Length: 544
Image 1 (tube, helix red, strand yellow):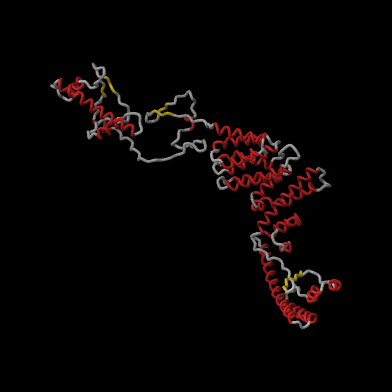
Image 2: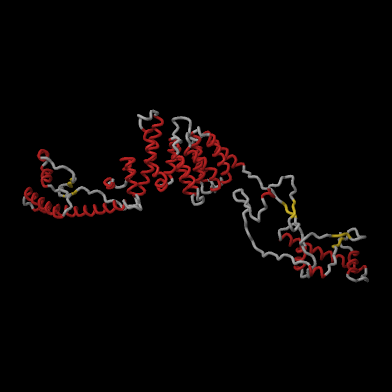
């Protein structure tokens, strides 16, 4: 069926000034014009599809004319929809109305805005579900319009805008089943093997980030309502630890929801409802968990550790708090490191010990549970202070070890004697075998303890004469005697060097800027000999 008839050809000819066009020519031109139009339209549609569009524009027609080496049609643009009008007297004939413009009005019209340079920029549509307030995003009040309000609004340039409301957070069916199963195991089967496997999955799986807000809300709700259920609290803290260990989860935005629950399990007055519940272990576990959170996220949230230490110090210094709460605060501060203990805990240890001593004595505290809690708090204080002084003293040079026993090699056996060992009596000498009697009489294992040179030479001479008078003129015994004397002199020189090193190290401990000596003495006065196992070198006992 022909679309372009000869009548349209005659009309077009009359519009360009040709009035004597014969009907035969018009009939011959009509099929050729239709063929050209179809070809141009097909090329225009191809340009539209290559541009990933579904609406044909005037630019697509211009591109098709350029492909056919035809001059494009001027005066048409794709900025807005074209307004066609129907020609009078022709049912299927339409045209675009061309308005006559005054050149003066065009010249005096204000200049349009300069077009922006073509560039590619990026911005955040939402960060962890929160839309940032930036010019590129729609205002929050516009997004939160009710559903019955009009969705089409007009901008300043009178262009329609479609505002899409935010989409609800939708979980897949698999994630919903996973969350329900983990929460069920946490609530009912926290000691089962399946729960341990679930913890491993929480710590390693990479597709669990959409569940983090649900887990944080679940943990917060259960901790606030289940303080009397010890097994549930321990299971929840293990879930928190597994989530923190997962490297694929971005947990920072949810720390403000997790930290109150974790701190509650550390300094709560009562965790569990039975005396058999080992809430001490739960507090120790939570203290290490708090320390790992501060160590990992302290650089992200600069006030995280300061706020936490303030909470723990207030709980420790409040005399109205229970001893269990004091224990949790001490363990939390100790887990944060020796510097925190030295700055915040040690200055308050002495007055706290005075208040704690009556609770530890049987004469003043008849309640066995209270007395046991007081001793647990005392042990936590001792351990925190000991680790602090151990960290302070390990920076000093290693103290020399104690003097080794004198060792003498002979053809028969290896003989060893201690410098503090008493000499054998005559009855013991008579009861010894001949070989041992000869060696004991020769005093080959003597260690000199006097460090003065004159005394060493005199004592060496005395020993040498004694050896000669007892052993006689045996050449082998004389050689043994000379070796013993030379070894004793060298050993005494080593003792002098070792003592000087010990004195230098102890003097360094007493330096004012380190303050280690005063801390050690004060802790020894408070805890007595209980603090000694935390000291590295035995020579520091002499320092005390």
